[in-house]
Image: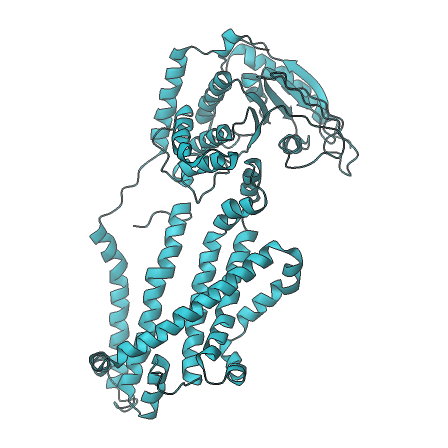
Length: 298
Length: 242
C-alpha cells in the first residue's frame, strides 16, 4: 500500500501536467474553418444548374430534329407556359394540395406501421425468425402489383391508395430500424449496461438513438416508395373529380394535351427532388455530421 | 467500509478462460493485470463489472464499478456533456444538478469548455478522459480499465498515465488496469499480477514500491519491467508444444 505522502503529487507537477494536456489537446484539434455561405451554395449549385442546362438543350435538340410532331413532344417553353397556366387557373395548387395530403397521410401511416413492426422484429427473436425475411421480400415486390387487389378490397377510394402506399413504404422503414439495431456496436451496448441501463432504459437511451442513421436511411427509402406508389395509385384508382396530380395526368393524356401532361410530370419530379434535398437528405446529412460519419461539407 | 475484497473461484466452463483465480484488491490500490493473449483478462473484468456471471465462485465488489475500454465507447449521438449527464441521470441525479456536475467532472479531467463538442471532434486521448469522467459520473470507486491507452500514441499515453495517477490519488480510487504493456504496468501499479494463459491463473504477483511520481523510462521501472517480461516469456514458452 502506498503511503499518503506518495499519493499526493505536489501541485507543481499537477499544474505542469494540466498545461501539457491542454497543449496536446490544442495541437490535436485543428479547427477546420468553413467556407463562406455564398461560396458553398455556389459550389453545390453550379453542377446542378449545368446538368439542368444540358438536359434542356438535349430536349430542344430532340424537338428540333422533328422526331415527333410538336403537339406530341412540345419544346420546353410550351411546357413552362403550361405550368404557368395551370398555376394561374389554380388547378395546379388544388392538385398539389390533394396529392400532398394523400402523401402525408399515407406516409404517416407507413411510418407508424414501420416503426412498430421494426421495433417488434428487432427485439423479439421469434418474430424475427418468423417475419424477418418476409419483410425484405415485401420490400422487393413492385407496389403496383398490389393495386388490382387493393381495388377489389377497397373499391376506388383513397383507402385503396393508402393500402398500397403503406405496403410499399412500411417494409423499408421497418428494415432501416432493424438494421440500425443490428449494427449497433456491441461496445456501446456494454458501455450502456455498465452505466446501469437495462431493458427499456437501454432501448431508449442506447439502442434506438444508436439505430438512428440507418433508420433515417430507411425512412428516406420508404418515402421514395410511398411517393411512387401514390403516383401509380392516382393513375390506376381514379376517383372522379378528386383533381389530384394523377388525375390531371390522365386527363391530359385523354385530351392529348402534351404540354400540360409534361408540366405535371415536372411537378412530380420537382416535389421528389425538393423533399429529398430539404427534408430527408437534409436530416440524413445532419445526423452524419453530428456523428462524425462524414467530414464537414465544404 | 474501506476494506475492499474480492474472491474469485472459477472453473468448470467448457473453455477454461479463468481457472480458480483468487484476487483481493485493496481499497485505493492500483492493480495491474498482465498476461499474454488468452489469459482471460477481459473475461475477468466482465465478471467484476457484472456483465457476465461466473460459472463457479463468487465476486464481491465493495463499491460501484465502472468499466473503461480500449475505445472510449462514448455515444456518438450525444455531446460530450450529454454523455456524462446520461450517466448521472442513470444514477438518479436530479435534472437540475446534472449540467453543473457534468461540467465539474469535465474540469476534473482538464476538459473545460469541451462539453458542447461531439465525441468525434476530440482526439483519442481526450475521448478517454471523457470516458473516465463518465465513470466518475457513475460514482464509481472501482475503475476497471481494459487496455485503456493501448490505441494512443506514446506522448498522449505518457500524459494520461500521469493524469490517471493524479485522479487515482485524489479520489482514492481502486483501479484494476489490464494491459499487454509490461512497462505501463510497472509505471502505474502498486501491484502487478501476472496471469497465465488458457486457462487464466495467477502465476506471480509483484509488489511495486518504486516511489511516485514515476517515469516510464526510469531505471527502476525498466528493471522491474524486464523482470516481469522474463516471467511472461517463460509462461509463453510453456505453450510452444501444446
